[in-house]
Length: 165
Image (cartoon, rainbow, N blue to C red; front, side):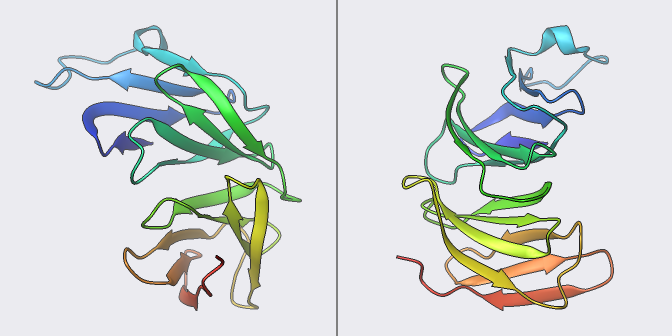
């Protein structure tokens, strides 16, 4: 799950039923539990479980989501429509992270590779592999640098990203 950086009361959650739900939370917080019917939108283009969600860093209504359908989906949350499906991964996508400018996504999948995706071109522009990468690792790109950090429950690994432009 992830909060929208441009709307601190909007939360996106991924679920095992293959949906992403958008929630507009009250500014005073929740006074009780909310069930799925209180979601303001349901994004249903995923065929399987949704494991990772990342809001775009510079476009307020763009959301990336990925999971067991071996794809990354880009959503326009204003209209609740899927704008792009990048299906260039041979296995479950474990983690996604936008770079600082928001023009590339780093993606890890269970095939132990990091792929750098240019969603505007619907293409993988770089593939990184390392024997230290493991199945089910999470990643994050540091702001203002070309460093990717991955974590596999035991080991934190740093990779330098060549400028894919």
